[in-house]
Image (tube, rainbow, N blue to C red; front, side, top):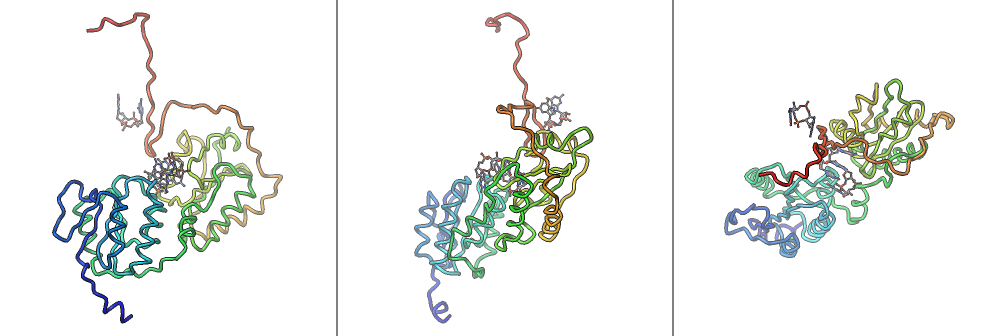
Length: 310
Ligand code: C2E
Ligand code: C2E
Ligand code: C2E
């Protein structure tokens, strides 16, 4: 205790920043030191004590390295250091943000905040002591960002076990583990046919079928983002494929539904249709999460070579 008070905090006003943070602006005062890379920022920060350290995150491939840097600094340099991560292009999932914060970052700033807003946020953490506990073992923190190593269709019991494990994992955020949704196909469509339209991309997104319904678990998805996620997964609006849906997103709700699901006898599990070797593109369109974009195909209208246009 006493040591911490006696230690000089001469670098309290210093700012060690990745140059990209300033977006071309000059350093804002004599207290600012800028560096070309996050590696250089990290090296400078290894002797810092209470300075503000600013990393810039431009690609999700940097996330692991950045998490390591932050973890090292927080464990080695103590609680007075102010560690900030600025997202420069949209690349951080909510799980990534959580990872950086649990490694010891004080603040993660979204790409959508303008530079001036970032500076205000950085002001707001001056003289702040970092007070959360940072686990020594980084591997545990990493594994919590992708706890399910499964994707796509799973047999009913495998699905139930997987979701159960997630819901029972105390290291994952309470009531923030994901959304489970049960979908009943529109009349005329069988559930195994509906399953062929269900194509999860993200690791941790799993689906199963039984009892005339398709059940999907979307890892870490928040309930307000459910439609965005479903639009990524189905090539058609889900309202056209399903007539009814039920949603669970709190731990208790999911756990209770799992109990009912585990009672469904294997005779009622539905077998998926055999996988065709070449699924091929069904429609010439992409979905950006909100709207469909169809792409025109070039067609020649006459047999002319059409070379002599002027
Ligand atoms: P977004 O695409 O608008 O998605 C918003 C949120 O919806 C995501 O927040 C996530 O909670 C949920 N979501 C969307 N699609 C899926 C999905 O296929 N599976 C699951 N389980 N959830 C989904 P999150 O994760 O915080 O991501 C924020 C934004 O970051 C996304 O906004 C997107 O713009 C970008 N992003 C995240 N991961 C990727 C990725 O792997 N590829 C691309 N291209 N962008 C990504
Ligand atoms: P993944 O998590 O298995 O996701 C595979 C693909 O699903 C992504 O390919 C993307 O096409 C789609 N996808 C997943 N989530 C979203 C989303 O929220 N929005 C949109 N628009 N698409 C989504 P992509 O983008 O090529 O990424 C390949 C892999 O790179 C991902 O595999 C993941 O492991 C990693 N990755 C990409 N972006 C992020 C990110 O923002 N955060 C993290 N932690 N990993 C990411
Ligand atoms: P969006 O691209 O944002 O377009 C919104 C609305 O603007 C469209 O509503 C349509 O009324 C009008 N619009 C946009 N581009 C054009 C165009 O090139 N020609 C004409 N005549 N009108 C245009 P709409 O039709 O209800 O489409 C809603 C969304 O669906 C569009 O949003 C787009 O994301 C997608 N979409 C629909 N049809 C097409 C298409 O033929 N091509 C493409 N690329 N996307 C389409």
